[in-house]
Image 1 (cartoon, one colour):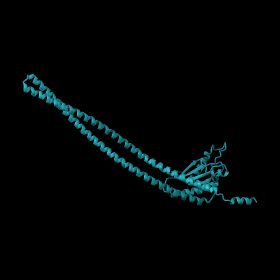
Image 2: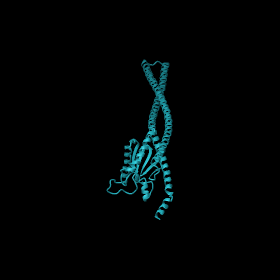
Image 3: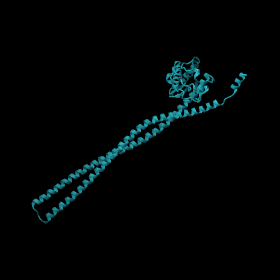
Image 4: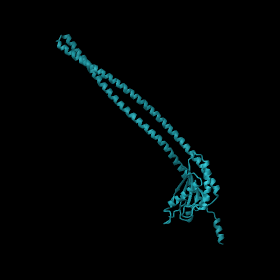
Amino acid sequence: MAGARLRNRYNRIDYWPGFVDALATLLLVIIFLLSVFMLSQYFLSKEVSGKDSALTRLNAQIAELTQLLALERAGKGEVEDQVTVLKSSLADSQTEKGRLQGIIDQEKGVATSSDGQVQTLSGQLDDEKRVTQRALAQVELLNQQIAALRRQIAALESALDVSETRDKESQTKISDLGRRLNVALAQRVQELQRYRSDFFGRLREILGNRSDIHVVGDRFVFQSEVLFPVGQETINDSGKRDLDKLASAISELEREIPPEVNWTLRIDGHTDTRPISAGGRFKSNWDLSAARAISVVRYLIDKGVSPKRLVAAGFGEFQPLEEGTTEEIYAKNRRIEIKLTDR
């Protein structure tokens, strides 16, 4: 009678775990896509930041040239003001010269003054001539300075035009670089996804259809009891046999993936939410999960897997597959996950 009840219980199909696995898989796919997007944005921002630094330096040079141009134009205005003043002074001198000449002519026409008065007027006229000559020399010098300033302004304007042209070219190059980077990242993600599918398919064939080893999203999951005794990080004999098969699949994967694809195999350790017993080797679930992940990585390295392709991570009890306090949920959350990802 008890055997019949047991058979009836196993014959009933429970659809709910499958539905939850499907939802979890969908959620993990979405998280993976978001992670890929964030990674692509990180590489793009890192590439563009270098271009932005060069562009910032170029803008600083342009600002400095613009400031120098403004100073030159201000100096030009001052020189032109001085020229205007000198020209006005020259006009006044010439007017005074005409006035003195008129006085001399009047004196000569009306009467002959004494020789001393004539000599005085002649001396004043000579002084005015000297003043006029000095003013003309200053005007010529100022004209030369204005011409030099105009040449400098023309050179600065030419340099500014060249800088603006280079700026436009840099913007075009940055835009093209971003487009090519996006294409390259998309191709890399697609290529790695294809190798991941092949790798997981090969693991299914090697390990068989087992309830304690399964795929969740983009990760291959071993229940902890497959590899470790309760509360320990030492791999048991049956776990070593499974890891031997895994090491063989990873070695084949290393030979197939091209060297330019920078990939890693991440080994993640997880525990359930129950705390570690006091007085044991491990102080927390963090320690236990990390120690188990490291044990798997070391075993795979001993079996010939390249250390540069392996990463160990411990998540403790903080990344459960399911929430709850039943023994079944505890067993699901105690696990080792294997994830093929890029570095």
